[in-house]
Length: 171
Length: 171
Image 1 (cartoon, helix red, strand yellow):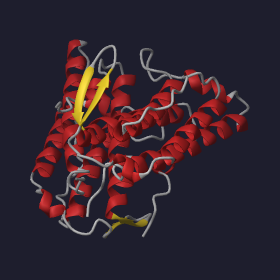
Image 2 (cartoon, one colour):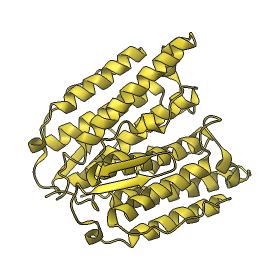
Image 3 (cartoon, one colour):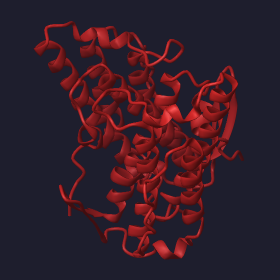
């Protein structure tokens, strides 16, 4: 037995996005309990030239969305990056979960070494599908999700690694 | 085609540990250029009750080492967690790379739904091998690697996401 490209990507994104949603909800509850505006989190940065919290969530969402679209050869929906509140960011994560939930494993079938291309104004990259999943999509996703977690932790929100890992199914 | 449990774990750890080693070397060069002791990084934390930088590296190492041992049904070497300098941490990462490099894909063969158990003083967990890889081993590894990166970034080291992602093989 072994993992299909679907198995190696979508369940990880779904599991972790659900954990991220719960973390965002805890951050809101934390702010409300201390009577400060939860939306101050959106502009927090760990260093002046790092991206702020809101962008970390948006890019984590886009990493998962873009991976699913590229691997299935479909066109992803455009998310406008217009979130201005924690409630907006929670809705963004929910929307990403709903999008990923709509895929079926058979949409990811095909040669594991087929080329997955990424073109941006700055770079043009061509990966095998396997390397795209393990060295690009998952790494990018976890990079931004962990940075978002680190920002909330740095900002005093009482969360721990169990929140990050989420409830992993047990045998 | 599809990914074996080896394909879905060890190449990711190896690729990212090599990126982490290069990041640690950049942090040392950064400190030397600014004439401060690079070893001050070891005790940096993003929040008082978070683990310091040295522990983030040690746990990233242990996440990868422990996953390889559990999936192959072998006994992992004990790493003493006695690193006190950046050079020690770089050596720890190198030692982990060497250990992982010694595995062969056939050592990971078997039922993807075989039970992988983890027992600590606090928890007893039983995963299917697939869920252990994607929801536990990879998530834990990237969590600690990203937190280490974030600490260096927060400490002013000039690194970027390209350093984190490393040179992903191109078609």
